[in-house]
Image 1 (cartoon, rainbow, N blue to C red):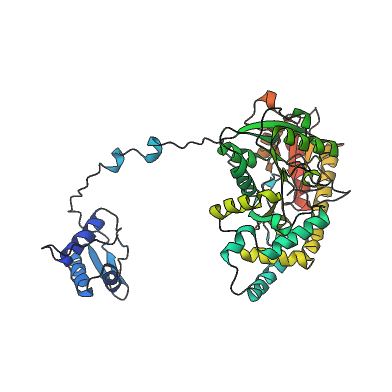
Image 2: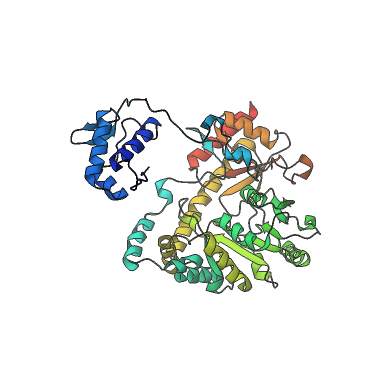
Length: 485
């Protein structure tokens, strides 16, 4: 909005400023009743005397373009005169085509609209998160004050690219103790969520037109991400034991995104034989694996199988997980364990795409891990989720008798395989929504029926982390009424 005044001309500076402001007001760029810049400040900004600005303002006031309000300031008149003929070298805006019509977007992705939760609805969907204040422990607020006290100057920006050293060391130790992963701290990269994991690895290996294996059903956000990068998606079906490795393609594949320990969303656990077959397949076709282990906690019973990365002798697995979900939905800290030979290229890519995650969250997380507080929170989280899981299972059995469930050994959701006497999963979701219950099925709407998985239209995904026991019971009761009507 600042004018560009010409000094070597016969037109006085005050008149030039007057004309500039008058055109802005007449063109509607300075709205009626909006405050105009103070004379002293405007004079400093454009390098002229305040007297010159005052003379231009007085002329605008006298002609009705501006008005003064005592003890408040100078404003554009509420009804400025409209006697200026606007001149421009451009045609009217209505006649100018928008840029999007001349150069349309290259990507055409399916809509990922998430139905809005109405007041009073019971929401079993995976995207529903427990955002109540109790979900983020009070200890986090205490840790914030202590983190600032210990690190008054923060961290050097370059340290944040990979993650602060203390957190990388803590994650390395934690993975060695809990998952049997022997990874040096240098291999641990702190990232902002699972999408950034995919982005970093995809920048190394995947180009437009490359084939990428995804699970079906699987993480729809991941599928959309690779689709946006121009990948040709190869949907490999899953069953109750995870990815069906017998259906992996024989042709060249760049990447495969898998969740062996707890398949997302069904919850199946891949046996060792399939894990070994997955690694050999990737070796044979030249693919790299992104192993998503972010859904393993909480784990309720038995011993978790070792991650694929621990039995991979070829260095083709990028292992990712999350520590933040135990502490609440507001946090997004994830980690990526990188094969040693790819540390430098991953960091180089990360350095040009973001400045690293918040140092404050990293300091707190490192402290929680090293002091054992994270383990305490995990036990509390596991206890609460186990109570809700048991409540959900009991409610399903009360209203539907014997139910066939998958994924009850851990995580925050389970899969209910509908009996034959009930309608399809999509039909159940539709009728349930009309009765105040939000549920999602395992159907991938972008796939044709013949390409759907073993669970096609017979599986409902029920997330229980964000619901109280009372809400879980009420939700299943409403669901039963909706289905039987």
